Amino acid sequence: MDEAYRHAAELIRNAKRIVAFTGSGISAESGIPTYRGAGGIWSEYDPDKYANIDYFMHDPTYYWSFFRDVRYDKLVKSEPNRAHTALAELEKDRALTDVITQNIDGLHQAAGSGRVIELHGNTRIIICLDCGAEYHYEDVRRQVEKEMPPKCTKCSGLLKPKVVFFGEGLPADALQGAAEASGSCDLFIVVGSSLVVYPAAGFPVMAKQNGAKLIVINLGETGMEGIEDVRIDEKATVAFDSIMSQLKSA
Image 1 (cartoon, one colour):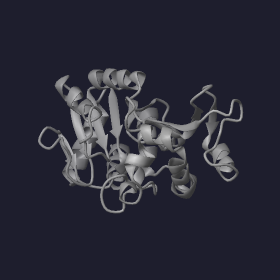
Image 2 (cartoon, rainbow, N blue to C red):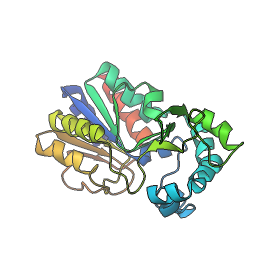
Image 3 (cartoon, one colour):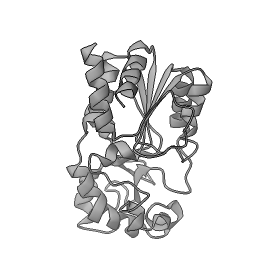
Image 4 (cartoon, rainbow, N blue to C red):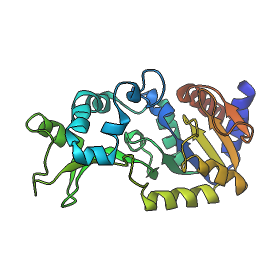
């Protein structure tokens, strides 16, 4: 494993343009539950109800009950971890230009990352489906204690988190930005993703096909086995502690 950390640090040190791609594994270390697997959100809440746009439009109360009872407390208590801050440092001190994320928790921005491409949106932002007004999740949390489902204070329209539900397409601008970043980088770092959900999982393949080196940091198997240049089977915080130490000691 030490050799993998040394190799990863060397690739980062020599890169001209780095792109990071993050999944739920990085945020799990900040207390944000993953979706799949034992203990995941989908083991307790039916994704065909709380995360499906058709069901949301039919009965938004199911989602807002989940927001009130589960999501809000997790967001309030979660903070960026050392992997989030390491990526922010690589943007400031190295050649990292973009963070493409499947996560919706806003922790990259909280850690100081400037260019974050959110493929699935951001659950901290709430929008009115009628007039387009935006609210902070704290405002809506106070509202759900008074009425369910919460309504827009400007037009009484239906409020929805600014995230991509099942049945909705990924935002075109995010997809385009992610594709452009992936196709132009010379180093692509995957952090905390099993790389099984497409089209997002296609971005590291795109980077590799365009000549980039590929570092995969994930606890467990991924869909990229055999094409990565460095494979680190470890938690993101542990891996970045070692990589950043290697970079700072050079």
